Picture 1 (tube, rainbow, N blue to C red):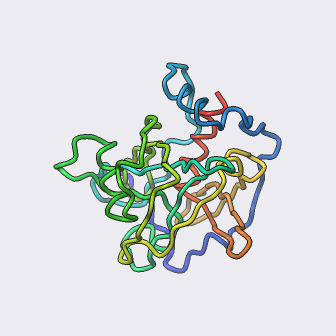
Picture 2 (cartoon, rainbow, N blue to C red):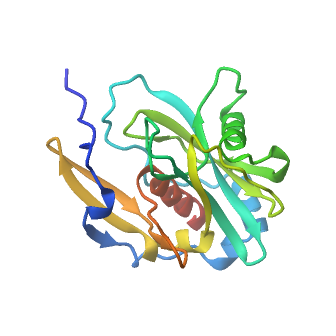
Picture 3 (tube, rainbow, N blue to C red):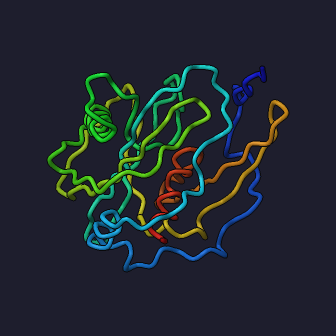
Length: 230
């Protein structure tokens, strides 16, 4: 029996891992494909596509757990934005990282969409009446053994949010057009526990703070890019 890969060292800092490549050679998603009606049509279509990233090298020995995240696309006058959170540093998994609102499935949840909506309400106070679910992306398996279903949804700009201080340190938005442009996608690699680990990052500077989007969140955004690119 092969031993499970070791987790990242306690002092691991993804910000210090060198960039080994950028994807500016890939086309960005056209502006017209990032409009609300185009997104509705794309999710309603049955067009076949192949996700680029489905799993990370596993470092947890726990039994895999189903989870869901909401990929909230806020309908701003200036264009769609992606609502993201920064997790608090004391959480047991993915602490301090940029993430979508979401979490583990509860037995009472009716499906993956219900999990994402419930968790978004609990984490950031996002009411279901402001959310229009478009559809889901393929399950993304994290190295920490979460089987994550990304639930993509439109969010009314009239929504309000209130963060749960136990789980969420900050809430912010990033233009969808920025994230759907591979010129902003960076590749990283590092060796630990005898294995090479690779991931994407999408750092975004909002004029005051640089938001370091990486790991599973960046991986799911990359799959959204592939889905919308067609």
